[in-house]
Image 1 (tube, rainbow, N blue to C red):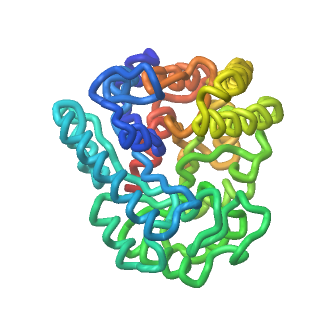
Image 2 (image 1 turned 60 degrees about the vertical axis):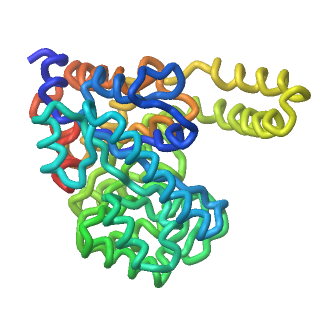
Amino acid sequence: MSYKNLHQNAFVLDSHCDTPLALIEGANLGKRLRKGHFDFIRMRDGGVDAVFFAIYTSGKLTPDEATRRALQLIAVTYDSIEANSDKVALAFSADEALNNRNLGLTSVFLGMENGAPIQKDLSLLRLFYDLGIRYMTLSHAANNEICDSCAPKEKRWGGLSPFGKEVVKEMNRLGMLIDVSHISDESFYDVLAHSSKPVVATHSCCRAIASHPRNLTDEMIIDLAAKGGVIQINFYPPFLNSSYAAQFWPLCDAYEEASDKYKADPKKYKTLFKNAEEAMFSLKRPSYTEIVDHIDHVVQLTGTNHVGLGSDFDGIEVTPDGLEGVDKMPLITKELKNRGYTDADILKILGGNFLRLL
């Protein structure tokens, strides 16, 4: 079977997309957008059947602000789906997503990136589940009431907090997937020890290839798979390639600093911002084929049942060369075919592995 036909026949699922951030700024996903990586037109062009929209909240927000922000992001997502009901529908389960496909519709699932919006209240966790949240990333770039993040040097809990252990138990009971992306290594192993269900890394890569605390070690990947879980490979170039990362991070820091100054005083800092922007975006990016390098690595460790795709579209500044948006997703299938994967294994990697956990 040709890669195009295989991709068309597959159920293709992207487990992490930050497009609600664009929605809250007024983006119309029913049109082909020039900015960003995702809209419903390009989703269909890319043969993507389902996507998880990430309900992301910053660790800089107060608990009440985080809860309010999460509800706002869910609301604008619902509004966008309703406005494009001829193209897309919400899904709360694998069966609903498969049924949507039979009706000619693509599916949007909801995942929560950062557990801060539940504060220290399990009733809020249940509320968000009722609103459609089907996985929750326990923390983001800051330690929270649930667990430690991989980002700060100083940890708060040394893994899961006492409340975090309650959260894990309740997520298991509800049927909400636990996402271990962003959390510390100690938190990761606490989750594996306390969860009675498989857990997922919805947008992470392999630390053996690109050394970064956001990525999983070989041991973590093997243990995740032994629990029945799946690692979904992130498309973010500095998580894919260490050499690129060494050049990128200083440019990214300079860009973010210039961006903050430009927002405060556009006239004064316009040139500074433009120069920083050009420096970061002109850096030669790794090829999209390096996504498949990470897939290969996971397969060598665990077989083909524990890996998939979690792009992080609209949450990353840059994408791999050749994969500038969701419409380019068939290239992943082409590369998998070129490397000799069987059609059955490609179907699992493109979506089947994650779908079985929903």
